[in-house]
Image 1 (cartoon, rainbow, N blue to C red):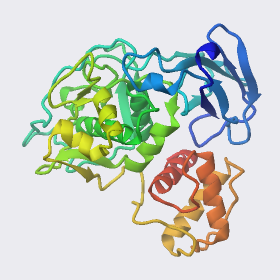
Image 2 (image 1 turned 135 degrees about the horizontal axis):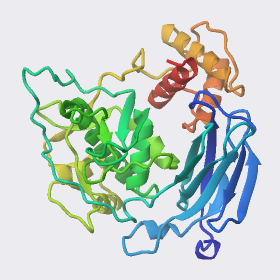
Image 3 (image 1 turned 180 degrees about the vertical axis):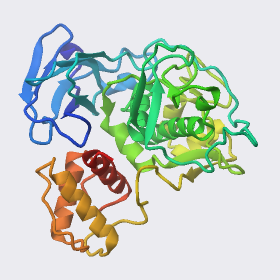
Image 4 (image 1 turned 90 degrees about the horizontal axis):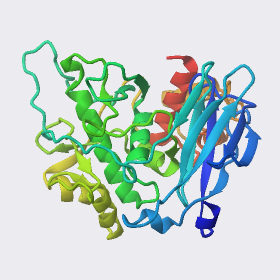
Amino acid sequence: MADDSQGSYGLLSVNTFFQNIGFPARDVTITVSESNGEVISRTTTDNEGQIQPLRLPAPPRGYSQQTNEPRPFSEYDVSASLEGYNTTLIRNVQIFTDTQAVQNISLLSEENDITIPYPTLWGSYPPKIPETSIKKLPFGSSLAVLPEPVIPEFIVVHDGIPSDSRAENYTLRFKDYINNVASSEIYPSWEREALKANILAIISFTLNRVYTEWYRSKGYDFTITSSTAYDQAFFYGRNIFREISDVTDEIFNLYISKTDTNQPLFTQYSDGKRVVRSGWLSQWGSQELAQQGYSAIQILKYYYGYDIALKEAKRVQGIPLSFTGILRRGSQGERVRVVQSQINAIARNYPLIPRLVVDGIFGEKTEQSVRVFQEIFSLPVTGAVNFPTWYKLSDIYNAVAGI
């Protein structure tokens, strides 16, 4: 791949955990290899369970901008080993030029060997089975749908078609699911507005399944499937991309809806080249529109109609307090106390984060702790507790506290 990269590179970050993101795994040996077994790098994780991002050859960026180009990503194998745990091996971690791949690894006592398939734009997958974009909800039934759209804390993904009782069910956080699907469905090197439009479609698709209790009302014990025929691509254990997770952090509580209903629109989509359907978002078409200067909402209206709007889910399950405004130096009050208390709890497992006096005053020391937190968890380093930081703090605090 080095010969094909023409001087193009992407970054690879690796984060390791003992149980979940709240418990970083230190001193884990991380080995990155070519597919032929040639070792490129071998290093150990720091106190935060991380390694310094590696710069790896990748195909030219232009390969990901057109459908008729060669494969736009390179692939590497990543293994994690620590005494007392079986080695985890992740094959075919995908690297795109000028992007940052993030591979999260949870250490397990049993064997953990994962092979990441090609993304749907490059691989061969069953096309989606068309469904109505607005679902008819049960009325007067014991299977009552949720009273309003909410962001679930967790998604249960059935790794197969709905009727396959042998398929595994995976439980993961909502944002982790969205990042996994987006990293499987689109290219991280696309225009940001194209990423945003596609991620909003993925979120709305998912929330429609949640809001209508689509599978549970049919007697199944999961939220959604990994089958591209029925739902969206999901590959357990795959790497995600920083460019995608940044967008998800910004918009994860927004969804697409018709202006006259609260129901999240069932936003079906196709690649737009092999499969084209009227009223569905075209993935390749969204990138072409973004290159022409279209915003995300303009792209969405182009495909789903001009009677749609972006709406906000008012509640995030599992998060005790909702975001009501940015906290920065000079802010005071109970919400600052909450931030300071959460930072102190997180700092027990992430010692780089300075601990704080819980006084409800957002001063220089609180700002510095927020900056370190943002840097560790790949957020824009502003020192202010904005929307993505508020919810990331809540996520990590819940993980640390075992909530």
